[in-house]
Length: 450
Image (cartoon, rainbow, N blue to C red; front, side, top):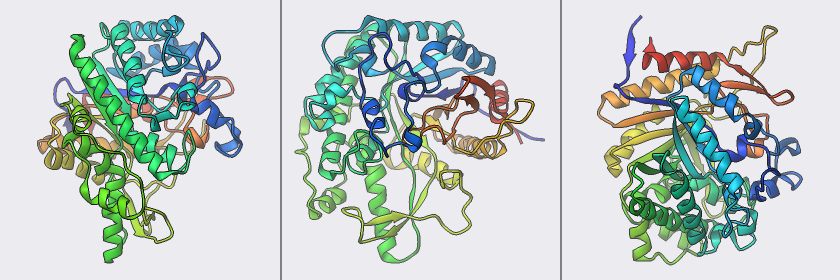
């Protein structure tokens, strides 16, 4: 047996998001969100499910934090529900919402667990969607107001902030592909939404720096390889386009202060209406950050398809790929490639792995055990590769498994389980899975036995 040792002070944690775990959607003055509305429309979510109860974290946060402590977590990444703080999206602050998160933060700190707080993890107040949502240029100012309140109220105790989680999903899956709230199919609207998210991100970063609260701020991007299915020139071009769509359109404004010109040209050629990129807004969104969060799940292979407007590509797995229950391939070397690319191509000086995990069908045995060896294998492969990447000179300071426990997995409902803790959604019982016990040992050793 050998041992892989991580650097001293490396941070191990777990991650969740508000709508996926909290429940309590009608309690203590919380306002309606776009996900409440999206889930109410038949056909949007598997089995007509919703996040009304989810993992019931709103009522069980103390026992959840106690379980995190028993598992040895050093940090916990969670998001604040905008509509708990500002039920109308702006204006009057809901003090009961402030109190909930204040209590959660205190509970974490008392348990020796550092909070990493995401401001926006997709649950926009419906009242703001009624004003155009992220396609409305005013949204950036609304987001600043929300961010300012959170930083002012919690910044004495929270020292790690994430402005946006996966703006690609919030914009392109929400406004173009329609697979997420608000469920639209308008590519020009999606590009506009992504731009206004980034202006809002920039305003919050600027406010955070000026607040004097101290700490670090970053953004969480789902950056994953898009590789050509074959050597055919049209597949190679399609993969480059897919990389522009998912990765470059989101990392380049942050790290380079500009949008990729080849994608601007391509979108324009397809009749997409682009926002007017303002110099001062590009400067705002490219302010230096303390870290870039990487949400990594898998690479995909890409084939040319003229049937898909405007992108002209489809995703297709290679034959004999090892896949999870979402048909996502297991591609741990892509994890390494992306971290090296972030450093070498974009000069990212500090990476925080804000999400990494996988979904497999779990079975609870008669003696209340969940032997999720496929998930454990996935995590072990990725953590070994993470160590290799650090050894090769890439600065990665923290790793958050997605997710702490099973929850409402967006349009997949409760069928798709990513947790290292099993949740029985009928009883809300929590059972630590084999992967959870294993991860606790990784944290305790700050490394792996191999």
